[in-house]
Picture 1 (cartoon, helix red, strand yellow):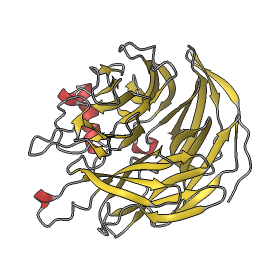
Picture 2 (cartoon, rainbow, N blue to C red):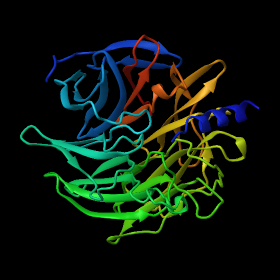
Picture 3 (tube, rainbow, N blue to C red):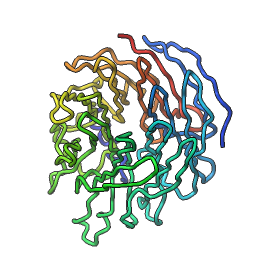
Picture 4 (cartoon, rainbow, N blue to C red):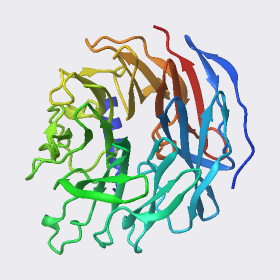
Length: 406
């Protein structure tokens, strides 16, 4: 019954400048790990963190809200301190959403971030705007897609690739038909260079789940995207699929694993991916057979095939996963799950043979939408975790780090 209640909760979630340099480190013990608290240079109402790393440096974007104005900010963390935070952009007509939040990728000195801007008065009619900047150049607020349809465009993921970026998103240009039976959310991909030129935009899946996040990574073969698919016909199977760029073309969509989760609606709970040479790891949430759980699977051939998945959670799950490879090809995964009367942010180290270390509880958090999707990033032996804290009057981005032992 408890599992069923959590599934119902998930379904109900669907309706479908510069600032001073901040130096930060204080330590606190939580369970078996020593965490270093990192004071993020936010002000007021802050949420929707996104982490990325490049050349040993950590990068963070987040959203701040004041009155009706949303402001996207960015900062770089190096040698235990932040550089001056930057205002990337701000607006009164943005679509700001707990599940569809800005993506971030850093290529050398070039930073690429997206925002979502309302295109009409429709609740889910919004466009993807890109912001590309470095210390010398800046290209602001340019449109990713060129269809001109007032519809949903979002759930962006991006990754550094081939001197520029690879980007993937959900595109609703085919959801405005008079015949509702023909309305389908699609998955599209494109490449972007460091001057902002967009090329090779293409549809790679004609029918996908409407509001689950996409996730991208780069293998030895090239770009990969994982996403929640949607079967044809009336079966409504919502499993995680993978599409790969191989020999200059996209492979056909293929399930990472056939969970056979049938759901007449979107769970707003996507997948996560990371790569390390030919190794690929994918983590995801499923609730097939009314059993909410976190699954994880490894591939050693660039995602062509995956080993049998392993269950990661402690007996129940909320989801909202992230995943990163470690030096020894094991992987670190984060997720939310209920624990007694609490909801906790968990992290675990999982090995390619399927066994894992004891779960680490990062913080007691919340299943509310406003708590968003916690972020995980690994640089060398250091793990960084960011989330939105709801314990005070206003949501606040919080962050810790800790060291992985061999």
